Length: 533
Ligand SMILES: [Zn+2]
Image (cartoon, rainbow, N blue to C red; front, side):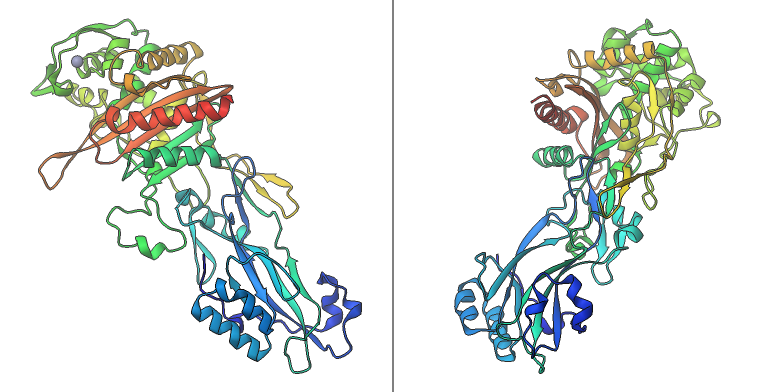
């Protein structure tokens, strides 16, 4: 594709005496003709530091563009004519008249004596891949203003990485015909940067799955359940890092990172109540659901007032029976539930990276839950309870990692110019939230949800998995007078030796099973394909 030309006189010219420059040159300086009195440099490309994924694959500077530098000869114009836009071509003719080399981005590939070709890296792709984690820079001053670009701005701009084109000039500062010239790297290939826990392949799987099921506004998180490392963190809509202005007035708030923003959680919270019940040895509690239950003056109903009949913990969890969880909550009591929620990260902040501040959400205090009605409300995730998709992912990881709560982690290390690494000092936390036996019971409940109830359609065909749907009431009414609902799916997938916790969230959805279940299934199956091959 043809690109706007880069005008030569806008480039940085370096006039440096020959002896100082000799060390950098790729050509043999001893053969310079006697008429040479200086060397000029054109900056072909300038890079900030790298942002790597967990396997050291670059997440930035990946987009390579063919760039040509043409010598000011008529034969250059002849060869490049078909590759340039009209304006670019005129500019090339101008350079020839001025006896200066001409540089532009174009598809021409064949290098010869008078046209030199290189590849230069563009910082971002246009598709918004991983944009909420990477962030973006202010193009005018090269300052990181969002995401890792902001958090690690000092490190990422600490090294001047340039690809230069150097050439001999005549006494009149024109390009010397027949003189030496070539590309010279000045730290251009340095490895300095920051290494994240993100896995580029998993990030792509998550983003593609969200797009496949047209999640306009939402988020998706994939955690390594065993160590809390974030393998994917996507938020939709995405934005174009090369042109953030395009998204500034978008009413869907593309710059908001929904993975770390707090929302009503609804029935994914039943996991917490179930955990508390298992801990309280009430896992054999049974009740009878008639589709609704009156507590004080409030009548609480199951979804669509469906009567679930005789239910135990596993059936109630699978069918998301509200009346069962209300009765269970009243039986085990407020304090056990709030303690379990706190142990599982509700209402707690954690450290991700300087400059990235996840919402800590909201867990009601004991003083806020003084009536059976208030306790009933929270038993199925309603009331003054908010959590981020990332928090829900850490919460669900406890069921599959033997009962530990591990705060999520995003950065592994900083990388030096030579590729050696300095590990990031741990600021997260990790503790036992539940016993292994309790976690195992919980895991069995999540797996059983794929055999009966609201999750069955989300069951992946090629790996062991478990999960829970949720359709959360927000209390907000849309312009049609209908209540806005948030959809969730939280679960895990075991693929080869790995266990991943996967949380899918959709703002303003229809239901967890309809909106988020298919995304969960797609991600799980794709993970199983790449991890088991
Ligand atoms: Zn019910």
